[in-house]
Image 1 (spheres, helix red, strand yellow):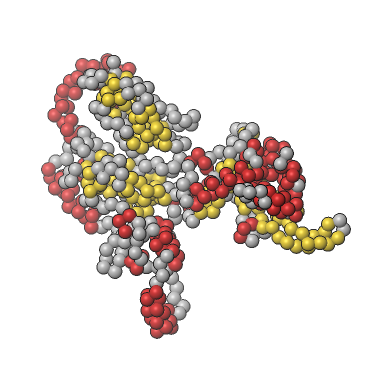
Image 2 (spheres, rainbow, N blue to C red):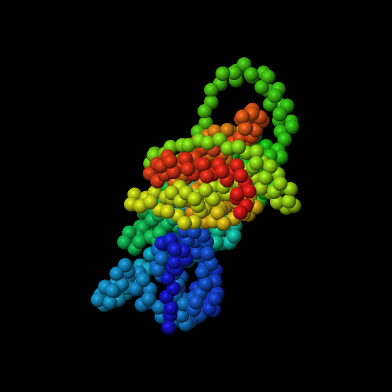
Length: 541
């Protein structure tokens, strides 16, 4: 007997899933424990295995499609088994009402047999929607198309570079065929699940699918031959009005370059047409720009500028750069925080002499490396245990007290700011915190952070001391109730035991959400934090 497999709930907060890739196809023999598909949840992309054996009779959700939990995903049964009753039950939102109209349904099925071909997407044609590449992604921007309409696509080929709110990621094809249609042009932004591209056999007419937003054309409005004739010139017109490629060489040809390479080249004033690419298919990547030396061009440019400097003097120029998805996400998040949370800041100066001596002793141990920032993170975790009011989140109905302590560490990246999270920070040693921070910071800068590594912080530390900044106020990383701003260690005259001596101090600023943290609570937290940092031995207990 056939078994219906529904979209599983693979995480506690999952409400819907995206089938990233089917690892089997209809007609395949399935054994218990076989991996059926890769399913993207709100937390991660996970393999989904079968708990049944038999033949895969039906796939209900195609690759790239999103479906609610408990919606029909697949059917496994005996080869040749009739599953029409199961399929008709899934097609209706109210399956209980279907049996009452069984006769009508049969008549409609019979009468519509002649039009079923117009309803279905043509054989071999695959509709690709804008994928959800991060847990918070609501729309994506096409940074670069690596294929163009008419190109042959193999399974595993990179189709495009898509910019999300977290990073710019390469998007590969799970299909093979010809790229028949591109729905989102370079530089354009589109919502998740909107029509991105169509792949299928060369020469296939997909105009009806395009007109229907990527869905199968309905039988109610079959296109007449006259309408099809009108559609073809329109398609040609669309092709003619496509925006030109962002970069061209001196012969007018396309220059392929990664978004990061384009940004660096623009910052350095380098013409991409003068750079040789070492990436796939000659694509220009970051190292090509960094290693580029415009030897002859520099001389020619210098000579030319000497004759035109008077003309160029006083020239005014502005350039509009489209906001990246990451910058949009940062703007939205911090804007919401700044304009909804009534915040206040408290400042304190910390004596760093003992901390500097302790760090030197710790780092003298082979294969051990601890930074001052690691010491601050550890001290924050211990202070949060003593002041649970700071380790909270505000909601309209409740104040949420977190028993766990997850400290987020702000990391600057090329396109903005990411906050990887050190989980259960209070339970980690200084060396474990140091290793964790270095690992996550490296992933952040290389755009390799997993969504789960950026979620769940209960407190945040932001350190600009390495840039020589002594004091600054950070914006709270909601839903946290507070964020600590860490300044540079400064050598200066200080008073100790009634004597003026040379000392080392560091300024800390705690910004608090006044809805959850009062001034006295914030001040007490800073006093405890100061004690831990000034006496590092207390953090080793």
